[in-house]
Image 1 (cartoon, rainbow, N blue to C red):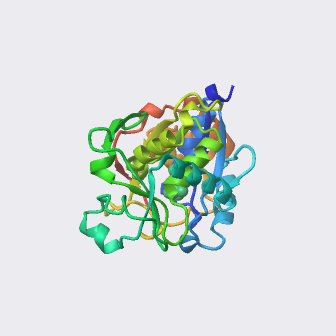
Image 2: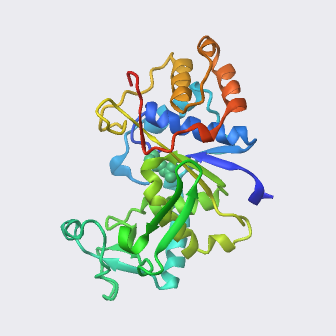
Length: 304
Ligand code: GLU
């Protein structure tokens, strides 16, 4: 039954080639899936064309393969999933919780980023974003147990506010697309970076609003594990903006070995002279998620 099977995923946005920070996410989600004899899917999150770099999808997929991270089944491209997102919007519309909002960025910034619900009762306007109303402070508390970070709690009302599910420019929000697709693909375990820890309550709330927990295919909620962010010497998250280097080709075993070391899996030194397949075989057998530090950030500690 799908509900008891492990299905994990890696869901890169094609904004550039993989660097050390994205390799640790890909590797940890892969190893956790394989260690549990599960499937590992790859989904290309290409729903934000202004942020995409031509050729990035191709580079990412080549890098995954050269690092021995072979996925199961077909790739899923979010750019081909508009019908599913529109259906979800329809469903949300029927709950009466969606409203259109034309507040500008400056106003939201003045509110400290936490929307105050001011457009909730307005007539629907054109040229507007769609927001999803969150429960009031008394009912807005969401708690879940992260497999790495432990108990995490957020009050959607006080910490987030009504959030955007469809942007003013017509693009679907990350929160909605990821929730719809994790359900569609039957994902049971999500292993990803801690920069998304504070997005998880919004995704849990969306799952609730879309009645996913009552559907027949998934009877259990998703398990989450948020990895520390790999940071550079200045303590910044490794990212394209911070000029994190793309993984060097020809050094796959070394990159994987450093990623395993960073994930506190204690790979034996002598595996550095072995093949990608041998190193990954060892890593699958010896994977211990619990060894990963429950820290929001962890220096990459090498020349990355
Ligand atoms: N596409 C997102 C990213 O590249 C990750 C989404 C997720 O894992 O939920 O940051």
